Length: 187
Image (cartoon, rainbow, N blue to C red; front, side):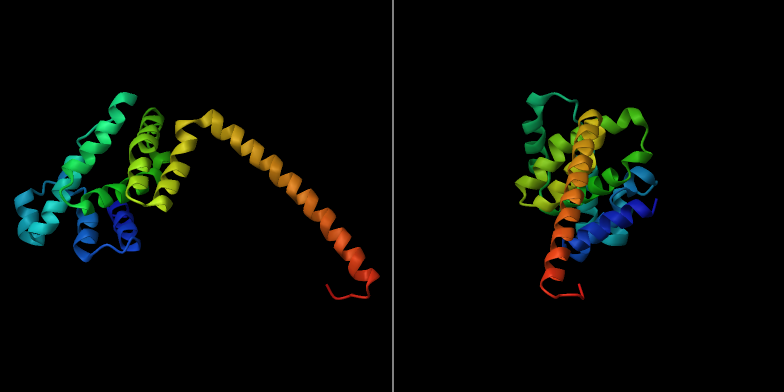
């Protein structure tokens, strides 16, 4: 119950969000995981943090059902529902950590979450000009969404790596010969 909100908050700090957004990141699952009410949260942490946490919780109720024609509408709903851009940024930080721990989710949920990440959250990150986050989300989701294709890519990369290693070894030997031929001994 602590590691996930902490990692979410760390991502928000890395993105240089303000203290209230980082606090909301720490508290973003409080309604779902505890008996804390919005009124209690508001009393303890104030209106703004309560508003951000409630916004993230509401975004969590939107569900992707794998229908391509609804993807763009869902992205638009995310943007419209979030009256404060920090709500979306908290949700993206939340999703990033969820993707980093996807291996601990039951197999039957992994693919759905990964596809949702590729079709909703990565493009949303891109739309917000957050290319690095988009890339991280895609890299984390791809093996779960497309395991066969991921295996093929891995195999190709391994083969290319082995080829490069052979090429580098040949270049190294050629350079050593040239150095020796030209009197360079310490290399």
